[in-house]
Image (cartoon, rainbow, N blue to C red; front, side, top):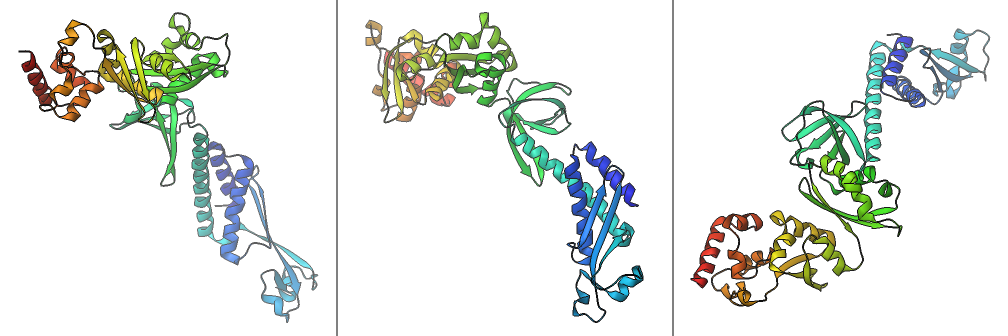
Length: 414
């Protein structure tokens, strides 16, 4: 392979990989200097001149002429007078000899190795560029096209045909994708695995919801409204606490939009995820009240030492506070940073005839009672008012345990 073909083929390859000209020249020079060091031991008295446009390469070796009997004759940058005069008869001691080294002088094997090295260096550089490009995009929304659906992940490609990974764990459980679909997600993390960049995307991260608000709500994008905290049960429910830096702007109204125009597109993107937008406040009691919406709270007791909040509600508000599958209370707890315990108010004749669950501690284990209290059930009748299936769904208790509880409580009223 001659010099022109080698450089031109490399230049074409580098161009296809979007490698800029200065970087391409640097890679070429590094490879040729490696060849020089392998053959001559050093490269500090060599000049490498490359014209990538024309495919030209010139390698010049510079040596000082010394007397044939000089002790310096074996130095890498010295040449004997007799050897120099074979190149040019007029040379004299003390002059410098500039000798052009042809690529062919390195041998065919060295040239082929250089070609492989050049290609590998570009591939390594391409991986490095891709890694740093996406490292800077972590937390940002990107759009990819589905090109392969696997059991545990979906592979997408970006506009430059780079491979992106959307794991099953980072997909909303209602997501259904087909080959060729365009998918919006955020860059969740970027890692190097065996020298290859691995770009992980996410549609379940709270940051994805925040970025969607930025794209749909100009006030959020412009910084007039700040998203203070976001918590999600992906595909089911989310709570977003927002705060306005402009007293004239209602942060909740701006995020929801006229007749829900702004939030609807976000809800559709998230497979009909129910999004509660809440006005943030430093008043913890008020913030908890807003977080538990739509339930109406009667009394709140906050214990900063234990990080727990006791919330008392009328019986008809308990199920609203807890929400489907306990989602509302779980998200509210995560939003305010306190563990919320829900209790129903005991008032009236019917409640007086009820029995506190603690009265059954000799027949029902303490941790089971605590689990029932966690979902707002602190009396016998409050438990019996729910079906077995509802109790299994709302708690972490086994079906057999629920059946035993119901049996014990019913005996009390028989």
